Amino acid sequence: MALTPSSMLPLGTKAPHFKLIDVITREFVTLHDVIGKHGTVVMFICNHCPYVKHVNKEIVRVANDYRVQGFGFVAINSNDIVHYPQDSPEQMAITAEEQDYGFPYLFDETQEVAKAYNAACTPDFYVFDEELKLVYRGQLDPSRPGNSIQPNGRDLREALDSILNNSPQRTNQKPSMGCNIKWK
Image (cartoon, rainbow, N blue to C red; front, top):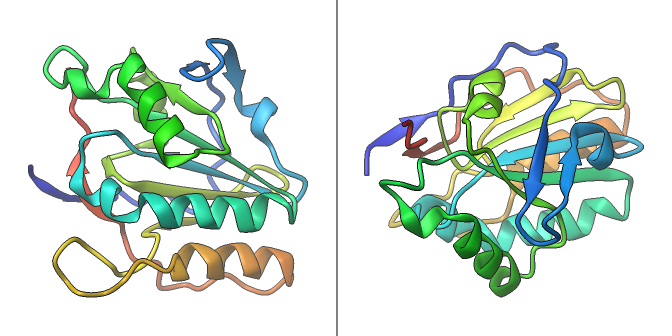
């Protein structure tokens, strides 16, 4: 496990389009299928990463709290499943059910979507406004496995609240830290 920071895609970047299989419904889902009225959260996660496991319950809480306020959420796994079979679509579906994901969990088999988003680690969070322009990228919060800070989603929640309150986004956005995406 190599601790890797987010690559911090430039703010203002337009959300790259995707069309990927949802491991739960087995149907294709596009960016436009998950857009929320106020904004959209794109998360790169996977099953095996201890950093994702550490925040999984808080990811679900944040999604549940903000979906009802008009935000769309989607999770994408781009890991190489040949070398990391625990991240296979079959295992993803099990994880989604166990964690009670209320958002699509998509498999990026070609890894093209991760590259388009310049994703580097899991977890990695991107918040796009109603015009699909990137307004936040980085960490969920400062908690990490072993640092004794409990996950609370503070940074992501602040970004979403800024959109709802029509207030400026925080300028010092901290990168997420986690396992590197397992490239082919």
